[in-house]
Image 1: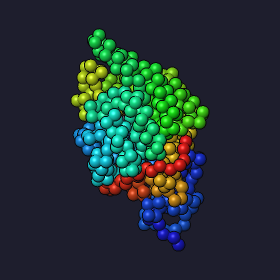
Image 2: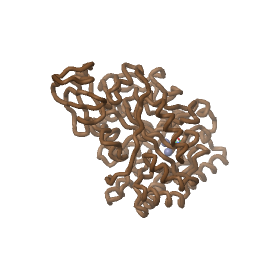
Image 3: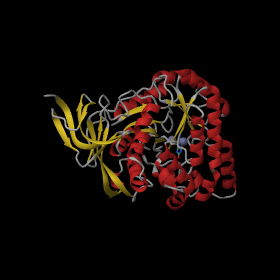
Image 4: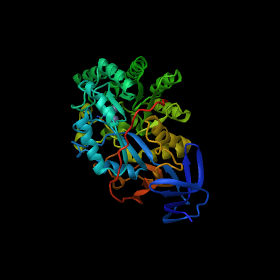
Length: 456
Ligand SMILES: NC(=O)N[C@H]1NC(=O)NC1=O
Ligand SMILES: [Zn+2]
Ligand SMILES: [Zn+2]
């Protein structure tokens, strides 16, 4: 009789191809058998008859701010929040840590911090800034996911936006290095001028802020990035697209054969400009929350598969940075990485009947493929890492402050009635979250990303 480390019995497995009830056996951190009934023995058995088993989510976009701004978040609190939310892998952005990840030394410092403290596996983005064009090859050799650039002010002094020449030349190099470039796409001249005019006129409320970052600023920057990428042969990813029209531009370029993708975030799917007027600073982000019609278009793209990825853009800050009466001065960034899967289940699956397979594709399978993770990630199959999230799919609960593992338990989703409770999360077969508690030690591993030949 075979013997395993762990058997999970009777759960409903959710994969990008559909759902099936099955037993799942784990040995040496991998899924080694999947069958209607597994007869071997195991050191431990989990009864999952009433649960759905999702592949652990892969959050391609978080800011955990370590080293340097660990008081804002950090790998311990951030990765605990992810584990509690059913996420087993994340990619940390190069900015909001100090130093930002723009050369070998800062990469090594971040890698050491994350290895010491993360409960889940991780990849690291490198930055593309006007000062580091000479460092991109080094960063590529370190195995960064790709290069992240800001086309508008990043909101933080130590990470500068790219001018067109830097973006163009960075893309040329990225293409040579086989790396993708990810952009925060908003037109800087337009947003800066509109913000400056509003502030000069003493118009510093929520509506004034929203008006200073119109959809057209996003559309223009997306188009420019697509054009530069086409011209340079660079693979492109547009982060946090906030508008249906923005997604349409990306989908159009992809349909014409260009290697470009995009993500949206739960906040653009769940909240609108009316909510930020009501909620205030906790819901301030850039690009800002949009109208209901743009939001509806995002959902349509998600259903259609033309919006292939959802990531959190978890961007926390200490509460005092969210206090200014001048809304332009309030920190822009939403804390949401713990709620990625539960919001998609609540608003997507339960409210709108978004297929579970689409949720799995957008939070796991597609992300692993797009960013060229090692083969064992993003799949719920024999041979894959046992990265799993066990979910009570219909259990309702209200999100409370005490549920949040963030450094600052601050979230626009507090008080929301959610459906779909994450009851257990396993990373490579090790339980890291169980019934509301973090268990075990930080054993997250670095996943280097190296160029392959595949596209899409
Ligand atoms: N610096 C930083 O994290 N900025 C992020 N916050 C946000 O709302 N949009 C961003 O790009
Ligand atoms: Zn951004
Ligand atoms: Zn971000």
